[in-house]
Length: 408
Image 1 (spheres, rainbow, N blue to C red):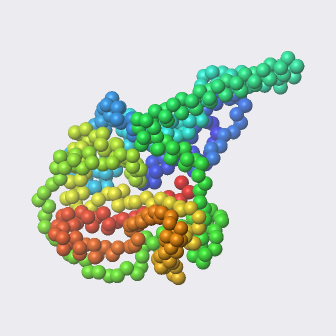
Image 2 (image 1 turned 90 degrees about the vertical axis):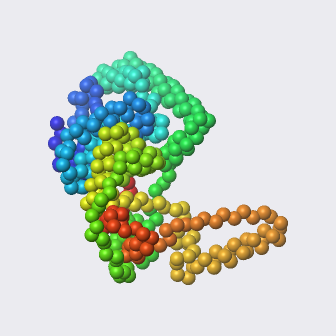
C-alpha cells in the first residue's frame, strides 16, 4: 500500500543463511484507517525474535517440533551431500521446526522482559477507544456537552489504565516472589533482564593515539581496526606443522555417542550464527539424532566442518570507569609491583589499627589472545592425537572467522 525501497521492505536479515523477513507490522483499527497517510519503520530497535526454547520442555510441543523436523528429514536424499549443503538443510530445518512449534518470542512481552505492556486488556482498549471517539466528537461539534463528555471519558480511561497497571505489577511481584522461593535461577534471570534496560551503554572508546571518540562512525571504525589487528596477526612465528596422515577412516561416530554428548549440553546459552540453541538439540528424538549423527560422520569422513562451526561471535563487555587508569600489568610503566605496593600499604594500616582484612584473588584466563597453531598441532601430536581426530580438530581452525557485535 505504501511503496518503500528494497532495503526498507525487510526489517530482519540473516546473512549466513540468506534469510530475510518482515517482522515489524503496523496494526491500525478500522475506524482510524482513513486517517493513516503514511507509515515508516525506524530500524534498529532491540527486538528478540528467537523462538522461546523453554516451551520445548512441554512434551506436546516437543512432539510437534520433532514431527516438523521429521518431515524435513524424509525429504533429503539418502546419498551423502557435501558438508555445507547437509548442514544448511539441517540448521534451517531445525530452526524452522522450532519457530513452527514454539512461535516467535518478542522481548518485553513476557515475565522475563518488561511487564509494562501486559496491562493492555480489552477493558483498557474499549476505554481508550471511547476517549478517542469523544475527542473526535468534541473537535467536530465543539459544544460544551461534547467537551464534558470528552473530559469524563478521559478521567475514566486514566482510572482504568491505572487499575490495569497496578494489577499487572502486583501479579508480576507475586510471580517474582514465587520464583524467589521455588526457582531462584529464574528469579535472577528476570532481574538481570530488567536491569539490562536501565544500564547505560558505555561509549568510552579511545583512538590509537589516546583521543576520546564521540561519533558512532569513529567508534565502529576503531573497533574494526582493533579486532582486525587482534584477530589477523602478521607477526606469528612460523612453526613447521606435522604432516597429516593419509590413513583411511575405518571408524565412525555412533548415535549413542552423539546422544550422550547432546544430553550433556547446558541450556540457557546464546546461539551462534546458526541460531540453534542447545534446547533444540536436547529435544531431538531418534530421527533428529540420527540426522545429527549423519552430519557428524560426514564431517569425520571428509575432514571438514561447516563454516558456521568455525564462526564465532565476539561480544564486547565494557568495565566500569576508565580501564586505562585501573589496570596494572600488560601495560608499559604500570606493572603489578604498583598493585603489590598498594596492597602492602593497606595491610600495614590494617595491622596498625587491628582491623580485619579480606583478600580476593581473581585468576583471569586467556591473558594471551594469540596461540601459534603450529605449536598446538605439535602438542596434540605428542599426546597421541593422530589421523582423523587431528584432522577433525584442525578443520575447526582452517577457516575460522569471528564476527564482532557492536551496538546490538
